[in-house]
Image (cartoon, rainbow, N blue to C red; front, side, top):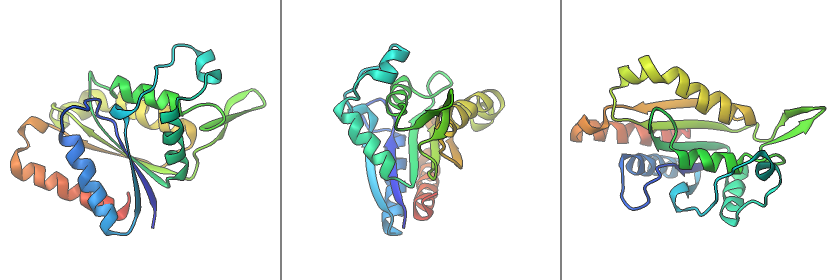
Length: 194
């Protein structure tokens, strides 16, 4: 049994989107397999954006983010769901990650190396990205940048590995059968907590 933290990164808190259905399918599979699940909806958290290195290092963490850090510390596996916006991670989710990946939690400085001790080692992750563009266009034009940004520059920097990425492309043309197929895949990923 794994501790799994599902992080809903869709910034729209008013409407349900495919990201929400995919996260629920993942949770259903994980729960059925006996994994312990917690959820975090970034759009429902109240936190400021960081505006300086001084704030990042020294400002107090918002109460909602203390709860988020506790969930990340508890988890063996993190699953992120978000739409691709302007070729990258939505700003709200990026701001959330900047806030929770603070010195003393996500890493420790040692002998002048600010990232010498990675604080989130031993955790794995899956990133599930939805996009309107066809999968081939994403892989040809954006994936190298997006993959580096998400895997190496954010999660890998703090010790999370392996990081697997799932792309759900051309979402406006999935149709009922395509949607069912993706929900089934998410349940399978949830059962394996991978």
